[in-house]
Image (tube, helix red, strand yellow):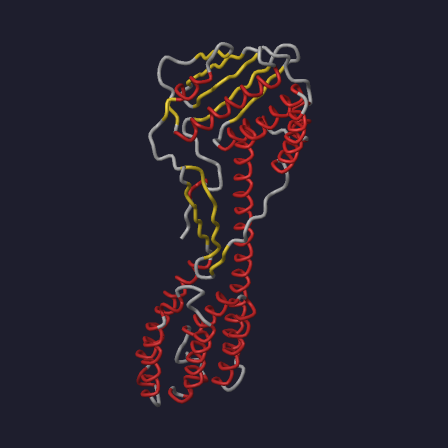
Length: 411
């Protein structure tokens, strides 16, 4: 069946860039408004007007530049900071000296902070420290002396910019860690799915070839021995560590990107579970089911039926071909319960943990793994000499817990 590729985009930076875009426009209007209210106090108003024309044109023309980290290049940051510094240094030429001494605003006013914040979001606290230091020097030159209010404003911008830059760096590190964790989870889920399929098919065939070869003897015995070696090697591979996964591709503009292969699309309507369990019924397998359909989503119905098949395989392998088995289907209001019971010798205490340690993952993956992915559970009860009972539960409103859970496609 065709598989879908899930793409999850995560970025803590995008809201910051959007906020910065709005901040630049609002502070540009604020600076122009300050000039308009004190226009008659300027000694050379034409310098202020010329600067505000440049500031307004630059701010509006460069809005796409502060939309994301990729567009906000080093050259743009340098030019943007130059315009802010130029406005600060032009203030003594345009404004009244008395207003400057009294602590009047510079020509760009608080628009300058937007330029510094762009440095912080783009490059972290080190870039923010550099930009805010240059702004501090320009403010001290403009004022002519380190007045109290000037020093206060300089320290405020310096601390705020460095703090924001540090927070951005921490957020980026957390984002990369989360992306890596999702990659590992995706690889683990895929490895478990493949392991279930291998256990349900390839491993059982190899085990059968080994047994039959030992019975027949001759060249068949050698073939059986080789099949046994391959079974052990394959079990070791299936139960081994995580498979390597590629690093998440990272686009500064879009955030970390995690790609994972999901299960087949369940676009069809509900499936009657009874129709999937009916083929299991036979001379030694009895099926008891409700008289009405037992609807489940296609994916959940297939996985539940596969888990039942794995439980019956375990009955044949461990209880013998002559063992009898019973399948009971119960359609509860919130969940579907399927019980598989046999009259075999039962499972000795501690045998399941030993089998899992040896790489025999029939119960761990083919049964419990499938139900866990569906948000359900698998309980195994066994008494030596009295058979084994496996109870499988699947919620009707299940949500697939694979890597695509939540389907949060963050863009």
